[in-house]
Image (tube, rainbow, N blue to C red; front, side, top):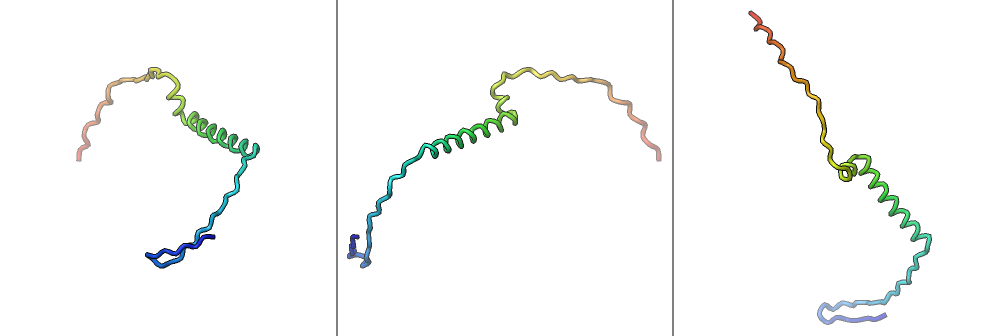
Amino acid sequence: TFIRRTTIMDKVVVEKEVLVPEQRESAASNFFWAFALVAIVAIVIGALYYSGALRRLTSPQQPQKVNVEVSNPPAQAPPASK
């Protein structure tokens, strides 16, 4: 433990060196995180696919055909008399 007294502020600062133990990653932990990452990516890609966004990006644009029937407007009724 080191004690240092500052002359400007007149307060005592205590400094203590703390050693952090090394963390060793286990194979099971690495497998779990790899599986979680793959699952999250699969969920995001599946959501994009089922929403249609992924299909629009990957498939070429095809012209759409629309059937339209054109007819004359119906005859207007005479104005109602009062």
